[in-house]
Image (tube, rainbow, N blue to C red):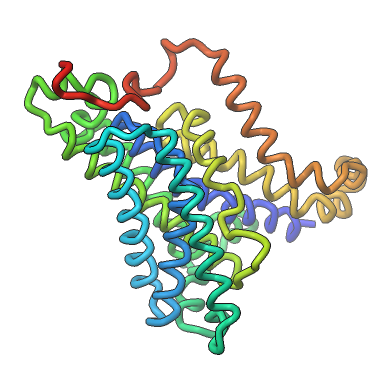
Length: 330
């Protein structure tokens, strides 16, 4: 009984971490006043690039670095199109998503049909480096130790990024300048802040963080390429909704992604929970499995509906989000 409950808690963390990477990366971008709807494609490109180079070098560090750089280059493209060329941000983001997912299938199918085949993860040093760490004392705590302190290094890295990003926005001068740009770029510009440089820098970094989340999903799935399902599988879109759910706060994103991790875990383990707790959770087996698959997206829709009904005065949404800044108009 405790093993099933512990596994349930453990998997909540597993499913929440890629969402945390995607959400925190998008929060950084939106704090600069830009709206990037290309999270799905950015994560897909980071996943494929990081995994393939990581498998070639057999190094998790190289995989993370390449994933960050590849997705950062996607962010550079988005910055050039929307900041320099003043292209429509919504259209640009959607184009990046279409391109990124297509890139994933193109590379994946090409390698799968090649002589060497898609590189396998099982038994490699990369696989070993991405496995759970044993933290003396904490990992040995009954139930909680296995659930919270028996994960791979990318899990703790994602949590650290969220905490550091919150501190960056709240406690540092560059972070405060970034928030000022998101609220009123003309006012920030008049005070000597280089708006374009700040946008470029934070869009690139935010996109790189998303890519690490994509890599985590590929590693978590054993690196097996499936021609029918993309590794990202809609997590990029959920991450965009979670930005609103977290009220543009990286600290609140930790809680928001756990909520979605709970529903994703319920989709996988509803039958096991019903079997172990028949009196209280037996009704889970009566719900069609397709409903559990759709549940994360239903929750996403509800988040968007509820957020649209809340007061804008209490929202952390940057006031200039999604609007291109024309310096000549200030």
